[in-house]
Amino acid sequence: MIKHFTIPVFIPELACPFQCAFCNQRKISGHIAVPSGDEILNIIKSHLKTFPSGNKHVEIGFFGGSFTGMPLKEQEYFLSLAKPFKDSGEIQGIRLSTRPDYINNDVLELLKKYGVTSIELGAQSFDNEVLKKSYRGHTTAQTEVASEMILKNGFKLGLQMMIGLPGDTLEKALFTARKIADSGASCTRIYPTVVIKDTAMHQWYKKGSYKPLSLEEAVTWSKHLLLFFEKTPVKVIRTGLHPSEGLVTGDELIAGPFHPSFKELVMTEIWYDLLNKIPGNKEKELTVSVPEKELNFAVGYRAKNKKMLLKKFKNVKFKPSGNIKHRAQFTFEIY
Ligand code: SF4
Image (cartoon, rainbow, N blue to C red; front, top):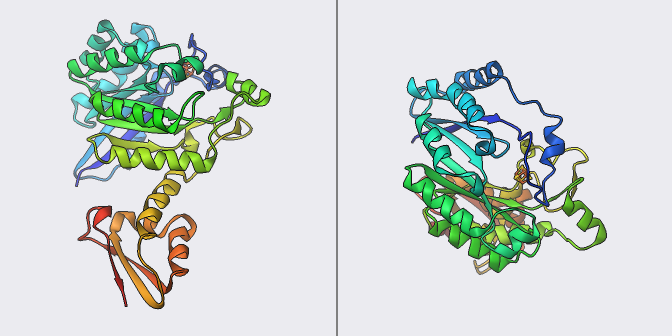
């Protein structure tokens, strides 16, 4: 099996002209220096040393801001640092994230020339009212046009989404997910909206005009989204904000559904729904066989699902099985 690795290179956006209601990137950027060329090369080389030999797919990922919002010369500079690693075969791809309205033919030509393979757009929502209320500064039509251009030019497309933005509903989030799949994206990231200090949303939160999703709501929405994406070719490469993404540490996080094990909570709920259907018998024992890679999710965060089953059975055992590839094929034995 091919192992995938991404070498993250964080390029903070220094002069983002937008003021998305949820973002304080400008303030944060003021404290984070743009890495020098030597620093970037060191990041790449030190990561390369840590990867095991054998069958693997390594990508350099430029994250942190809207890469293609930088002047072309700057983009070219950063890409010229990454390209030699692709030419030598040490890495297989270069990916970057940007805004839908920062895609045009000149940009795509440059990215092609330097071997970029995947472009992720911060779509956030496919509902114009949600985008407008969040001061996002672009429309869904712009996301659609940019997505088409990216695919036509031979890049892989990623479309990131946020849930719980102002005006968002579960129905709108599911609509966004459908549009992401219909747009031909090969991957997505699901970010629950949190309230960050000194943002427009922070003011609205203080006034009571914006209320973030509760953790429980965010987990339930994400559960529906994950189950939807599983039926499509779109791979969900992130569910929930990662502590290393900044913004959620220290006193920056004011409110909202942040949890360091967010994905585990979502997967726990998916398994809870499946396991809760097993008819209980307090006189008997239960053994559940599940795919190896989902064992922890099946047992549940803090053993939630095991505890639920222990209320219905005398004893409960979970068995990882190499033969069971998909969650839906789990088996159980009552004896
Ligand atoms: S989310 Fe991106 S585009 Fe919006 S303000 Fe922050 S850096 Fe700018």
